[in-house]
Length: 312
Image (cartoon, rainbow, N blue to C red; front, side):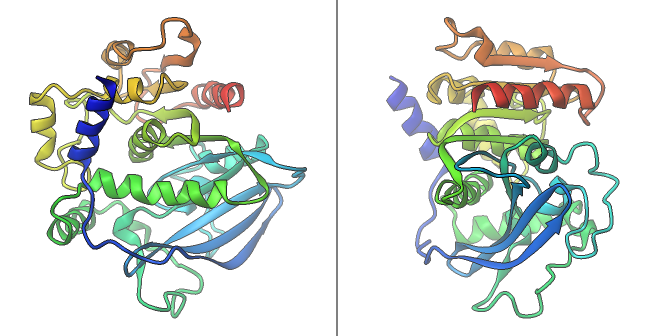
């Protein structure tokens, strides 16, 4: 039965046709910082597209080290500063999960989301510093345009499918790194990053634990119907009885912690508890409802990081 449900989910998420490309990961430069050693890459993520990918390593790395993928709009936000100018990004300081986790001893990695990928045969040209226009990342028209383009080019795919596909490549970059313990990889994300972390974490066996912050686990709790996620398919998914508790079941009752604050709430906990397989291990399924808005406070993030340290 679970096999049938997983097949139904994968059919709904969809697959792109004619999406063959050579897997490439090219280091562009190193980033020195008092708290970490950084490496910036371009990673092929489609037939003519590349994503900016940042890996962070603890200063005192010894042997194979556990890692956490941190999907988000852009790498800069998850380190809390502009990678090109080193200027602080005040909006993201305090929720810069990649920065926090590397300081706790994890290797971390984060990449750009698909509306902001590079294209061309030599994407380094004129992009050497990868300067970001951060206003574009928050412009929903940019997301809508990218989602519509994806639908035109790959009508059997979904935006959430593309986001998961790109994050799977992020996991490739971690699991294939000789400095990473590939048996100890987690995933963490806030908001959009929480959506991506949840889906990728449930569907990819390499992920051992999931931390997600206020992404709206219920169909009606947030914007799943936007074209860059599910589009018009969201209503059909709900009507057909699909529920995100099923993905938790399909994960094999993987450790999952949800930080609720605005879009997630106690109703989110009810959805989570409908997942099967957690009865003998209630500590693997945790809802922390700080109820203080979309942005998680430091105390909630601290609990989330401890959860990852326990299970990764």
